Amino acid sequence: MSVHRGSEEATSKPELDSQLQQIETTISAEDAEFKRREVLVVAKLDLYICPILIVLQLISFLDRGNIGYAATQGMTTDLNLVGTQLNTAVSLFYPLYILSEFPAALIVKRIGFNRVIPAAAACWGLCCLGNGFAKNFGDLVACRLLMGMFEGFLMPSLTLMLANWYKRDEIGLRISYLFIAAAISSAFSGLIAYGILFMDGKAGYPGWRWLYILEGSVTVAIAGLCYFIIPSSYTTAYFLSEDDRAVMRKRAELTEAYSGGQGHYTRSEFMMAMKDVKTWLHAIIQIMCLTLIYGFSVFLPIILRFGFNFSVEQSQYLSIPVFLWGSIVYAVCGYLSDRFSRRFLACILCAPLGMVGYSMLLGGNHLSVGVKYFACFLIATCVWMMGGANIAWLSTNSAPDGKRAASLGMGFALGNLGGIISGQIYPQTMAPSFTLGHAWSLGAICISFCLWWVLRYVYYSRETLKDRMREGTIPEPVEFSDRATSYKYQH
Image 1 (cartoon, rainbow, N blue to C red):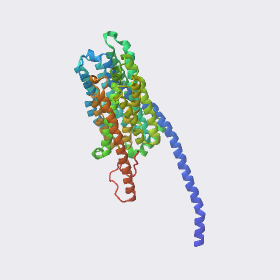
Image 2: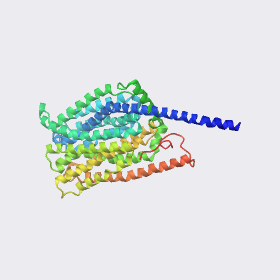
Image 3: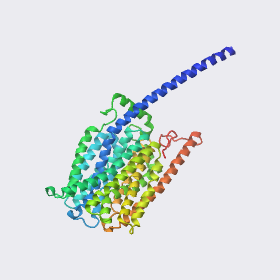
Image 4: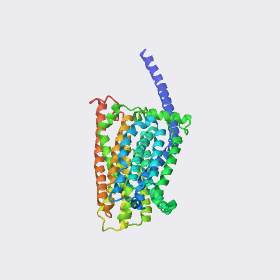
């Protein structure tokens, strides 16, 4: 009996191995086919979704940042701005901007990206247009306040929309597109401002008024278009076939732990974000980063005009290559960060160049204008890279969906305190040295640099803790979050 049973087992083992091999081959073939289809679907998303979001981000930064160019074209004189009133107008864009970001992150998925984003864009476009008809400081401030409130809905909405359409290892590069758009918008602002100099006096309006009127009108038109082309979800997207939707459905299932996908956030998920030290560390860093982004993008034309003593025309067109360089650097680093899933290196490598750049401006009274202009390129190397990489790092390391929304909302809301700060550190009364602004910006880079090392320690410590959970030495958390053993941090 035993001999017969052994013979039977010996006979069945090759058959079993053959069956297992066939199953593995089938699964492998199915995976390969899914990957092929997935690549095509992601290409469609990049073709239809990303351009919309990039254009929206571009025009939002155009509309908020054109005040710097308007100031060099005579706005301060025409509106009788005195002392630090220009700086106050710059800063007052941000209080309502900050207050609107956090609720926007929590409600946009419930109401619908296709409703919230176009409505917000139309409203801030009208406010931008209104700046072109401002008569005094009060009119300018009122338009800036309202424009800030409506623009505050945009960045959380765009980030969460990307997380809704893309997988975890794809989102970093797509978030980088938004910050690239911010950098490119600054370059476009210089180009547009230079072109609008030739409209000065048309219909009795000075050039700076045309700057606001034309950019505001374009924003309203784009908002109307977005109402029809932003899909509510992948199930109704006009550019996806039924096969594409099946791929998206499977992608949603595979990334459910990361994105949740329900759109209904719980109080416990909100409290997870508030109690997590990494939320606050990333938010503090984002304050530093956005101080740099807003200070550099808004005040560079003013620094070139009154700090380096360039003409109005030169200060407009010489800002263009600086901003283009910043966008190129971020595009390359954002791609590499996603390609190798390395968030810490993306943050840490560019910061020293910014430190050198601001140090040159601070202690460079003996330097030629050309050398100081080169320092602006060093600063641009780090400015957008720091802000974009930091928020991408937070987004890819937060789960479930409600926690990520609350974390991003907090990061954006607190981060935009940097906008208020940036408006006050470059008063024109401190020209040509602008010591306060350069010193503050240098300090912001140094603080960010140090806190990123702290965050790296936090993430590695948590991965060590997860190893102990797997070994059974300590219990796993009851509720699922990024602290669970099945969730691996990117660092």
